[in-house]
Length: 113
Image: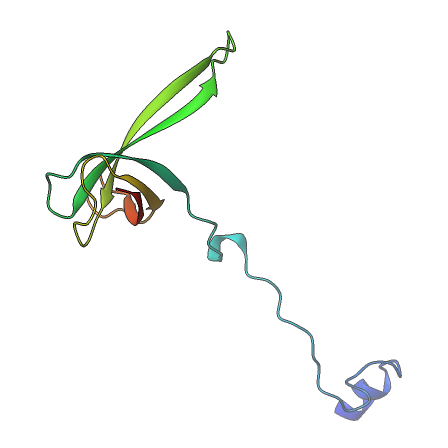
C-alpha cells in the first residue's frame, strides 16, 4: 500500500525520491508570541518606599479639538530591586507583569543622576 502511495506522487516530490522533508514548521499563532514591551523615560519623584520608585513622565500631544500642544503628566510605580534610583534622577522604565496592586513597570537604567 505504501508503495502505491509513493508511485502516485509526482517525480519532483522529495518523498518519492526518498529524501527527507526540509519544510519549516508553521509560525506560532499571535497568542504565543510576545510583542515588544513599552518603555518610558521620566523623572523619579519619590523613592521613599522600599524597592519602589514613582516616576513622572511628560508627554507632549496636540489637543484633540484645538491643536495646541499640551503636556500630559502620568505617574508610574516602578520596581527598583537595588534601590539605586534617587529623587530627581532621570530613568528608563519598562513594562512588566503585575508585581503588586500598582506596580506594572520595572527600572531598566538610571540615565542621569
